[in-house]
Amino acid sequence: MGKRHRSWKADLGLRAVGLACCALAYAAIAQLFAAPPTALGTPDLSALAFAAGGLLSASIGVAITFWGKHLFDEVTVSARWRRSTASSARRIHVDASTALPTV
Image (cartoon, rainbow, N blue to C red):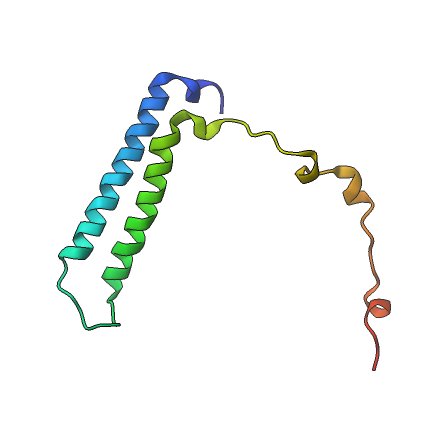
C-alpha cells in the first residue's frame, strides 16, 4: 500500500471519514426513533435495516475516528500463532476406512 497512508493528510482524511460514518449512524438511529411505533414484537424491515445500518456505521466510524492512520500499523504476532510451513508438511493423514469403527 505504500507510505502514502502514513501522512498527516491521510490521517485527517481517515478521521473525517470516521466522523461521517458516525453522522450516518446518528441519522439512521434518529430515523428509527422518528418512525411511528409498530405493534409490539413485530418490527418491519425498514426498522431492522435502520438499526443494523446505525450499528454498523457507528462501529466503523468510531474505530476509524479513534485509530486514524494507526489502523495500518503492523502487529507482532507470537511464534505460537504464526503459520509454519514445516508443521503443515508434517500433518498426519488418517485413512478414513481405518479411523472409523465398523459395526
